Length: 215
Ligand code: DC
Image (cartoon, rainbow, N blue to C red; front, top):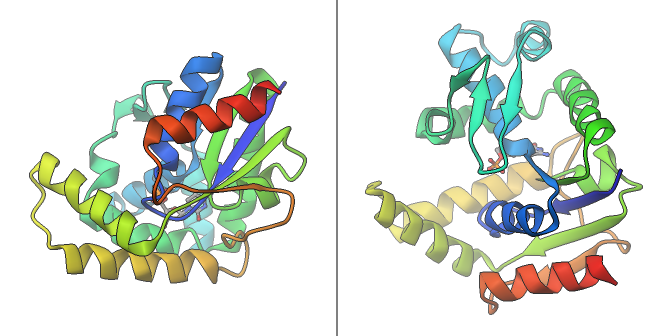
């Protein structure tokens, strides 16, 4: 099975890009952030603090996560695609994803997907820890200003109330958390293809990836 691994910070466009690359290649798209978000959502529903690490790991062990190619997320057959993007989940998921035992369990689940299909998997530690031997490894980046601009625009379209400064600050904090996790920290390595999309259109990034994969 072929594996295309894509890592990068929040707002780098990797979700949109990975989804489209998967579609064009006929691969299965896996959004690993959504997997962490499902655990965060369930921990909120069941009132489990992130300090109760074993209980959090059990949530994942007993959970069925189904990701569809059009980006829908089903947790135990419930469509949670929108719910997992809400503020309360976003603010909890960073702490949840720092739990080492959870990351280890998550890795096993993530590797399982590659036993069945060709995949495009995106996240923070896919190129480094989940699939260090992936067929293709990309690090998708964009400047903080550009990412904040894009995210703010998305919020406006979705009718979410926020200011550019708030969005920028929150991205900056998430970058810090993502890059300083004890396990699974977002890292650049010399064997990733680095793409800075700050001045590129989504289509250009997709074409570049397809071109490299096709070679
Ligand atoms: O990509 P996202 O914003 O939906 O990710 C949600 C959270 O999960 C984010 O705080 C980082 C974390 N995450 C992670 O630690 N490892 C991954 N492979 C993917 C996401």
